[in-house]
Structures are given as C-alpha cells and as structure tokens.
Length: 76
Image (cartoon, rainbow, N blue to C red; front, side):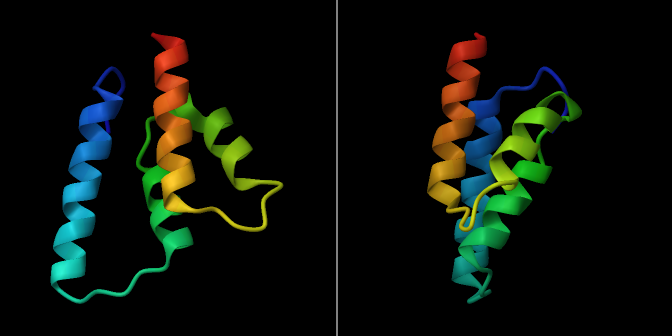
C-alpha cells in the first residue's frame, strides 16, 4: 500500500485476496494473516504496527482490522 491510499480500500482488497486463498484451499494461520496485513501498511504505520505486534500472545486478524480502521477514523 502506498502512502495516502485509502485504508478502507486496502483492507477490502486484502479481504478479497484472503477469500481467493480460501477458495484455493490455502491454509494460512490467523496470526500470519494479521502479520501480512500489518506489514502491507505504509511506513507511516510503523509505530502502530509495532504496538500491535509486541506485548501480545495472540494477534487475531479481526482485531487487527478493527484496530486499523479505528486508527484511520481517529486520524481523519
């Protein structure tokens, strides 16, 4: 994702890709999906990404999506 692009659009495209992977019977853990989403964000999200990753035992993709959308709402 490039700086300045819509986070909501990015997450929607990410979900479409996840659905495509599910249709192909690809097995990717929930935590790996969360990491893929976090690392697909632009560099301006570095601190946010680190806050999400460190200090947690489990990183559900749904929580990460909600947190990203919440951050976007607060920032805009």
